[in-house]
Length: 302
Ligand SMILES: NC(=O)c1ccc[n+]([C@@H]2O[C@H](COP(=O)([O-])OP(=O)(O)OC[C@H]3O[C@@H](n4cnc5c(N)ncnc54)[C@H](OP(=O)(O)O)[C@@H]3O)[C@@H](O)[C@H]2O)c1
Image 1: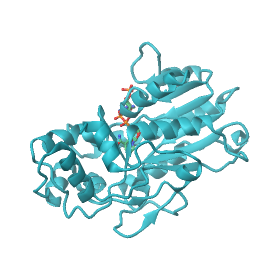
Image 2: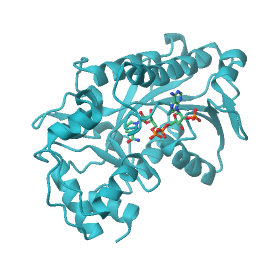
Image 3: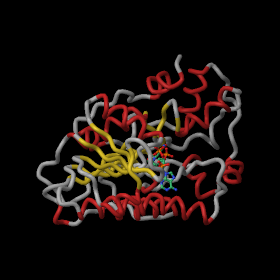
């Protein structure tokens, strides 16, 4: 299978590329920069979709970029880097004379309202309630294909929690404070912490590319990209400290996170959602890292 991956040069894209190539698939990345094995977004807009059996979009300005202050220009980049690239790919698929069998968009769990009690599955109804849920709405809408493609192209949205892996994402930023013994629960630590190992997220994407829906549907098929273990921030903090053999004594106060990250973004860490991968499991996907201990051991050793 030939797979086109928008934003495939990043943290999740590198893992997905490794997995696809190990199964004998061919990968072309869509990037802002030209290079070997890549085409640019401008190439897609001017030349249309290259021949492929699967298309994935992972492009997006990093939402936890510690070097960017939370202001209007950053928020605009968060939206346009996701919504515009997704729309460009969806339009190229719709205009193609041989559209791919599968179109897989990766968004996030920010569409589900943070809560200590509620549990969300892919069937949960939601409407936007803040900036990040509005982003998910516009992002997923930009990915919708016309009804005429329902028979030929399967449309899948995967909503991951925090993606944990060795060479990027949240762990890269967290490990130094934890090694220094400065890691601690965020606020009360009672908030849910939906997470997934990067290898399982790549696995769910491959699963979506390889399997087919029956019957073909005009609906978006949604899969929650979260491990089945429902953990809190406190449990995550204590398990990471235990595996690293470092103390995690001092809670990080909410006002500090609000000041450092901006309150609209700090929500991701200071509040959280209990997200259940109901359809992901029902579809037959088997997690390699279903619990924190196995995931964190793989990532940091121990
Ligand atoms: N990592 C997580 O914890 C997490 C959690 C939930 C959802 N997600 C979503 O999953 C997707 C993949 O995550 P990731 O961690 O692999 O992302 P990433 O490494 O931060 O970025 C992926 C790629 O997006 C492209 N990109 C960055 N800024 C861009 C911009 N301003 N305009 C256009 N393209 C831009 C880059 O490709 P080029 O430089 O080659 O153009 C980059 O390699 C993202 O959409 C992210 O929102 C991630």
